[in-house]
Length: 334
Image 1 (cartoon, rainbow, N blue to C red):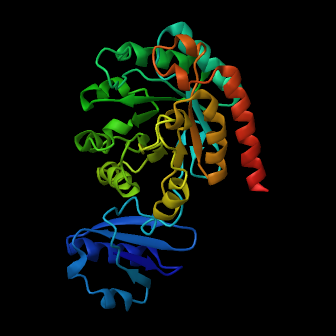
Image 2 (image 1 turned 30 degrees about the horizontal axis):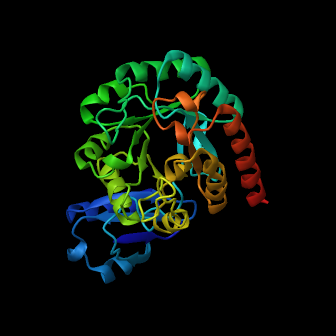
C-alpha cells in the first residue's frame, strides 16, 4: 500500500502518521519528491482501513500495490533514483560509460586499458578479478591480486572501479571497490544479495540468463530490503533459441523497467552479443532506447585475451563507439 501526502504537509504531521503506521506493525519507506511525499507501507496491510487513511486531511490518495517488489517499485518512489559514484551519476538523465577488460590479467594490461578508456570518455573502469566460468579448466581470474591491480589502476587514473563478487566470503577484499557487480549467474544467490544489502555501496545487478524482469526486480528487492537502496540494474542479454549471438539483447527491457522501477538501468552489449563487431550497433540502440549507461568490454589485445576476447573492443574501437553513443545521446536530448 502507498499513501500519497498532500503538498504542504508539515514534518510533524508526516511523522505522526508514520508513527501510527509503525504501531500497526508496518515498515514505512519514505520517498520525498519535489511536489509530494509518498509513504510506502511494507508488511501485512490487510489490517489497515484504506478509507480511514484516505479520509485524513493530510492524505491525497491511498493505493494498494499488487506487485511483490515494494522498495524497487516506481509506485513507491515516483522519481528516478540517482546514484553517484565519484564524478559519475546514474539515473539523472546523463549517459555514463563503464569500460575495461573482462578479466584483469596483469598490471601492464589493466593500467594501459584504464588510461585509454578514460581518454575515450569512460567514467568508470570495469575488470574481473573473480571470474565465473562455464568450464572449471578456463581462467578463473587473479582473485585478490586482481582487485589489488584494479585499485592500482584507480590510483593512476582516478577512475572508480567495478568488479564482480562471487561469494560473500570475499567481501572484505571489496572494501575499496566503488561498485560491486553481481553477475547473471548470481542474480538469484539470495544469501549473497542479503549480505550486499547490509552495505552502503552501489550494487550493479545483472539480469540472469533466463530470468524475467519481475525476477530481476525481486532480486533488487533482496538488496534494498536489507537497507542498501543503491542498486543499478543491468540488462546483459537473455538466452533464447537463437544461437547466432551469445545471447539475445532484450532492449524492450529498458522502457519496461522504466515503467516498473525507479532504479537506474545500464546495458551490457558485450555479453549480449558475444561478437565484437555487433557491440557498437547494440550500444547505440541501447542509448536510443533510454539506457542510463553502457558497460563495454575493452582489451588492448583481444586476440590474446584470457577471457571473452571475441566480444572485446580494442581501445580504438571503444573510442569510436563512445563518440557515436554521445552523438546519439545528444540528438535525443534536442
